[in-house]
Length: 399
Image (cartoon, rainbow, N blue to C red; front, side, top):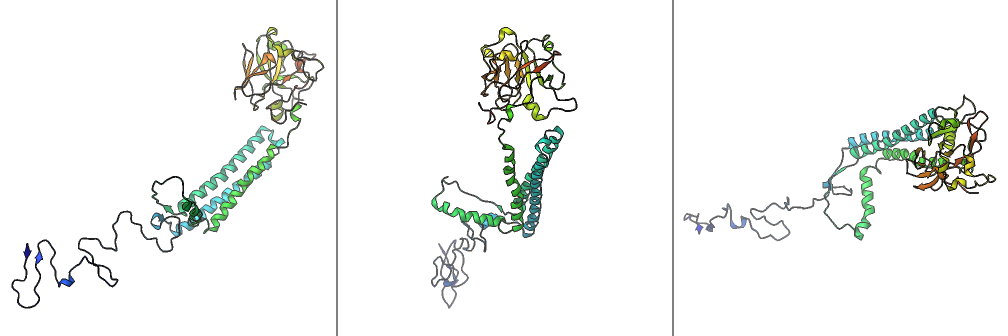
């Protein structure tokens, strides 16, 4: 069906008939829109109803990168912070890094401020722990706060959509990682903002030196220092905590009892150091004579024929309280089986059989202390331990 709009017009070129449903033309045929591209390099004419080429609507089309953008991700995925915010963030992060540096220096100073002998005083040890913990916390917090400010105010914000690819990277991706890393470092501000970079390195220096300094605590090798303690012939045995001297009669009213004890101090005005207490603390246990086991009759090396029973008094035996595994106090005692238990790792020792290991990770028995009584009837040591006390490390060796 056609429509004739000429209405018998006279003269001129006749207007072609228009198919019903097509747009009307306002000019000549040459002026109508054509779907055929023109020649000569000009832009083709657009067919009515199609989108303009300057505004593509194809889903997933990649936008051209902005001029001068050299970051690791596309410009459309990168949202840079304002320059004023970046400068403010650089200064604030640098302040936090300087605080972290001062905290690290304070940690090193606090470590060397108190000598090992001074730390033996519980009050001084508490001050030392507070200083070490406080300065280390300040150093770590300063670095964390500075890095947070850096990430939130200096580094750009990315919105990246990555497809699910195969996990192994191909050779091309591996070869481009170095360039990708350097682009990211440059865009993060690490290379462009020297103040922040230098203060961060400065803050990390003390923490890097701290492990090296702490290696001082691993030496020197104690050698035979653990083989000798304060226990000697004639030194009285006192109750741990109260300092009351012990008599054999104290065990009569409570058979199978266990008492934690220490050596008496040289005088009433001085107390044992923490080191001396750790090396000399003992447990006293009264065991019925019929319950002694075979190892109690063994001859003790270097004692001219004495047996372990000779080191007891009226059924009372003394063992080191320090577990030979890692040094925890083996302070639990089961009366019916005469088992001494260390609560840390469940090492179990048989008190009736020379404190032999019957269970757990410990590798050797608890050292035994020879005991007797003095002229006034008080329990005393008649010598030192037969072996080094405490964990089985380098200080323990058979001669």
